[in-house]
Each structure stands twice: as C-alpha cells, then as structure tokens.
Image (tube, rainbow, N blue to C red):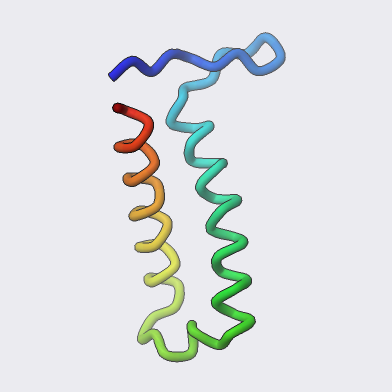
Length: 67
C-alpha cells in the first residue's frame, strides 16, 4: 500500500480526500438513477441507505487502489 499526497495547485491533499470526492460524484449519479427508477421508495430509510452505499463504494475504492 503506497498512497502519496496529491499536489492540487500547490496544496498537498491526502489521497483519501480525493477518493472521497470521486466516490461522491459516482454516488450522485447512482442516486439519480435510483430516483429515476423509484428504487428509493422501497427502502426503509433512504438517507441511511445512501450513506451505507457511499461507505461501501468508498471502502471498495480504497481496497482496489491499495493493491
């Protein structure tokens, strides 16, 4: 596992923050698809479901990039 800081316009940013933003953008697209098809109506607590999906996506991204 070799994560190094990312240089964004002269500011060093932790790699987890870049991954969090990338996963957040992916999750926005997935949530729009779920809203379009009405999938969130069948979930008991939509906000909790979206947060859990975000955590699953983020942890999967970290594990895949750590290889």
